[in-house]
Image (cartoon, rainbow, N blue to C red; front, side):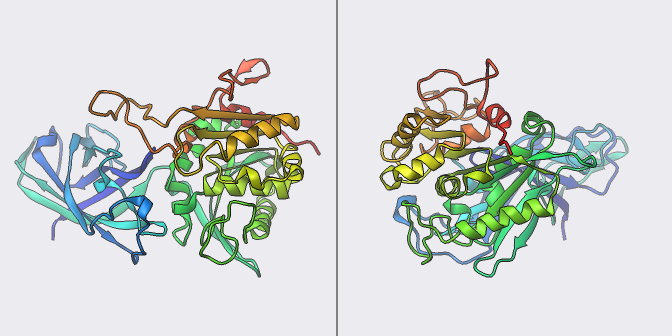
Length: 425
């Protein structure tokens, strides 16, 4: 049997990828200076669940299992958490991640939902590693001690029992809340691919966990709950488990309402005047749906690439939506929910109804990190439906007219605006 290793995953703009491998040589490493070229990292990705019929819009079905080598960016001594440390007892290997290469991803679309996969790694030490007391001979690391998901491992999972439809959910609760302290609640409703039974996927299928990063938490006063419910099918399910309804029908509205109410009862330090609801695509549809049905619950809402067809919104529905401050996000070239049929006419009707409403409409969804580029050197471009990427990175700053949104006279990001919204009573 080979020596032990573990992995660390990060929730990136394009998915959750293993970005670091930690090696446990079980020998003194003092004086070692490991180099990336001394190692080879091979991986085999295997399915955990059955495949479903493959939808045509997804293109060619990828073959499984998937095997290959990962590119190593850096190697260094580290502690058991993978943090660089000169006297560390482990070796950390940083791995390249790219939206065009799925070998490092810990999830896969199975034709119906995104699901976790098993990733078996095999790391070879190709040349002896010099240490103060001699050297570490050629060896293999193949005993898997598990994977950590940064930020994702801070989430807890529970199930809300309901006589009609029970719903699983994951949530984040800040530590060491002071007695009597009241903190806001952020609720995120996932897209279609994150439904099913792998509850944590609803929060790590996209970069939702960025909402519990220190930077975002600070915007909400340093502490905020995050609640991520999961639909067993999809939020747009009218009740048959087969079709998609973009006209307001859903079998989940009442169960979701009771889940939210139950969560607040169980977490009495929730500030009920600062409950914020958002979600992407399928979850954007459900966000609009819930605000229409229960406007009194929410201080503000932030639907992203929402899939509620404007033609299906009655004037009464528009007037109910207008009771709650809203900030929509979409991309002009969205191929899934064309903005001319969904968010743009809805935004205009809400403006006419006197709503406090904003819309950040990106031309397209591009990489803003500078890490990923096309052959011509321009930024890598994601599918235009993926406008949750800039939203979850807190990059929304301008309204539909291109002008900045102001909070107390100062330019604000969408999440800064959100944190400033409060419901009276």
